[in-house]
Length: 79
Image (tube, rainbow, N blue to C red):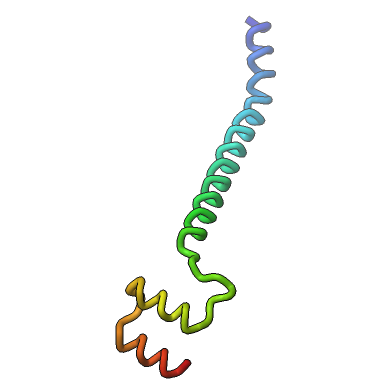
């Protein structure tokens, strides 16, 4: 009985390390997947190039329905 208890105690003493590793891997996986999804979504929504003029960007926003016709006309006058 002492032999089983002794080995069980040894295993239980280091059991927390296994759980710590499992939790660490789970956190790493969630962070990795979240970053990948953010990058994919960022690429999908970022259609403006650094070479686009402000008027080009305004036209794209109007075409996507982000702004109304009145807002478009007002902003176009400002530009």
